[in-house]
Amino acid sequence: MNVSQLVETLNLTIFSGSRGLNKPIAGGYTSDLLSDVMGNAEEGDVWITLQTHKNVMAIAQLKDLAAVVLVKGLKPDADTLVQSEAEGIPLLGTNEPAFDITGKLYKLIANDSGLTISL
Amino acid sequence: MHFTYLITGGNFTHAGHASSQVKRILKQLNVNPVTIKRIVVALYEAEVNVVAHAYRGNIDVDIEPERVLVLITDEGPGIADIELAMKEGYSTASPKVREMGFGAGMGLSNMKKNSDKLIIQSQVGQGTHVELTTFLTQ
Ligand SMILES: Nc1ncnc2c1ncn2[C@@H]1O[C@H](COP(=O)(O)OP(=O)(O)OP(=O)(O)O)[C@@H](O)[C@H]1O
Ligand SMILES: [Mg+2]
Image (cartoon, rainbow over all chains, first blue to last red):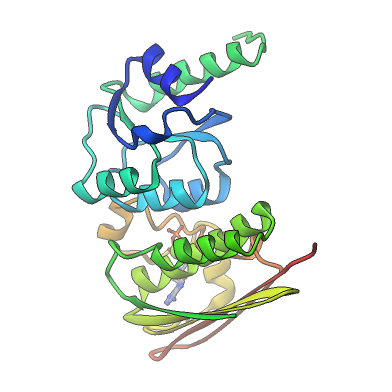
């Protein structure tokens, strides 16, 4: 699955960074603590967060994340948009809260990799 | 090869700039991507610590074929108890800084985990000096 398929399936808003829509998705990480993401997110992850400032894109770039999803209808700061565009890392949005969108992303990734989820 | 960068305390807009530049340089030098990531994770945390906790600082990156040495020196309040500061979860970050998602108290342990050698020296009321060494094995 790549970022553009994720956008389509979960009906996400594309704020910027559409150059990176073909990036493949390896997994996901949900957190609002930046050094937690720095320490624990992995390359190719989609990062789900409510943080909207520019440091989010700095971390996404340093960690080679696939995309960032802002939750609850939050809008990125102007300089966050600029950096997402410059790095070609998609900055996406949803009206849903982190729990719901994380659950959906988890299910998609599990289905995509042929895992059977039993809950 | 030698590079230097300046860091201004309180300026979060600029935080991560040096780390980003260093990532580009190491990529051009064909350093292994896993090693690059470890170096920039550690450097980013050090950079943000100067922005969040100190007044000003500078970064000195020295690249040799066998190792990358990063020195981060700041003028700031210093760290009274380094052992305590290293504990995951310990943070003196201001409410404003925490609102941005910093202040989990994980930065120093990320630096420790993502470097081969970490040395921290600090003088209360003067500043902090951090040395990060990463060995490059081909
Ligand atoms: N350069 C520095 N100058 C002064 N104090 C520092 C410096 N670096 C770290 N500290 C002190 O050590 C504590 C722990 O640092 P650490 O990076 O682990 O966590 P944090 O910066 O508070 O939060 P996080 O890094 O998770 O966003 C800080 O809260 C601060 O009290
Ligand atoms: Mg820190």
